[in-house]
Image 1: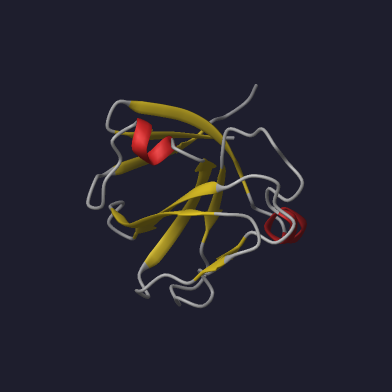
Image 2: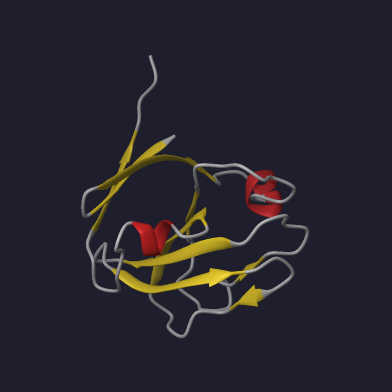
Length: 118
């Protein structure tokens, strides 16, 4: 689990840190807190997200190497999104309206901290 802070918004999310988690992501889920993807490559096509087999829309937040939000969007089921830039370090998937309800904007700084469970 990771603790994410954007402005005054704090949330704990899972990390897609295995092949299986990256492959299946949020497919088939109706309720979730969020999912964080660490990008190995900063290529816009490697940073694309699809919502095939998704049951609900999701908010996407693209984060660059400076921990700033570079792009945001909402993606409905059965769509694909390819970011406009090659500068993605992390992708954060959140429930729909998380961006709007928490006044999240491009260039906001984000903090990502790994929770250590004892």
